[in-house]
Length: 257
Length: 257
DNA sequence: TAAATAGTGTCTGTAAGACACTATTAT
DNA sequence: ATAATAGTGTCTTACAGACACTATTTA
Picture (tube, chains in turn brown, purple, orange, green):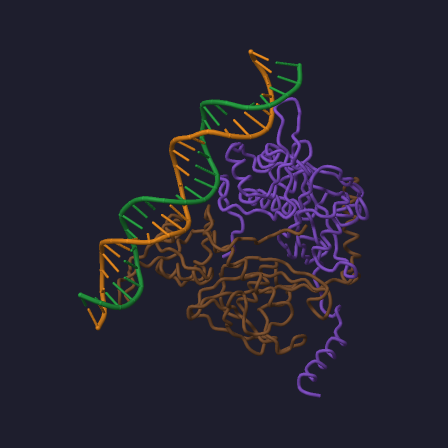
């Protein structure tokens, strides 16, 4: 047995003796700000908790890692999303991880926050375990009317800010659209999130130059001039524009000092 | 006792009975990719582990949350940074959180990765507990020569990619500079990270328009034409430019689907 | 003087902003 | 024809790229 074998053996021996409950660990969870657009407004999915703590408070969708079946954190987020909405392939992005002593009355806890964008059509909500109710809540300026449990009001406003800031330089809103849509529809989605009107000519130029949309063979007729419908190209990744839309000053991601 | 009191009481009762070790939890840690520039190259801080697992392997600086003294995750990251380098106020940004079954042989583990930028001058390294050695390792193309333990090669390359991608549209490199520096020095820092030469005129125009630097009263004389020295304005936040430097195609932050 | 590094003048290119304009439908 | 919504023409503006040029030092 050479020295390398000895080292491996002793690591194996170490692992054999390792007791995971020897040291206290913070709790870890995953929360998701799941956005959609309904009736011309941005909404986020909330559940009403049926268990302590914060029983009967509204919160974002979330839960604990299933150490048996979840292979990684995103799997936990996807599982929660699918349990509640049936949606399997959303735009899902990790936003931030918040961990501190005070956010959960049970002690030190860490939560990784994802944000998801899903089209509004055809989603059927299921409250599921731990929730007595589930519903879409209208988001205005990063806030909902409901008083949220834990620090979820903060998680929501962070998620919304990130969404808004990324909309200035990416094609993210396409993930909120139905399968086919007109450029005007997409523009309205941008305007809704940015809370700011955009020039139609500049908007169309920007989106069409990105080459992420394909025109469909059909026009949509609803009473006035028909609109060309588009769909997202199958292979199109999220587009990052070289220049931002000029909007409110961006100051996301500011560092500590 | 009204209904609200009753609800509060029963939550208090719930918390009194709550047993944190009732459910298995993943382990949670914080790792930091601490970058500096030495001898004209980008370096990252590594330690050599003195304990299992991955005993005698090199890894990024990291460790467990101290549930008594750390008030939040960033406090853990700052504490680790200060223990190793003595630096107290770096640029410190949360990058991503990785959690899965396989990254640690002891089982499901979650780590939150920070990246830090510190000036090279006057830093004295201390290996400290759990480490037999500590040193700056040269980073080339997101990699170090050392074979890294756990999934730290991946954490490092992610950190480096994020750094590179943010350098295209922010003023981040100022945090790697000493107190005063010339614009040419700063340009060299950008070029080093981007691995791409920049036009001096365009570079100066870009940086000066951002109004984040103040000229000092002194010039630096070293043998040729003296250079105007600048310092970072005290109040200057990280600057986000409206346009990217044209570089390799940006594709950070791509979502799952 | 030459070598070396700091810094400028100025033209071009590109994509966004502004805004008036045309186009196509239903009634 | 009018209202309503879709979509265009085209001028301006802002800022990055390119690159030749000038400036200030030491030896």
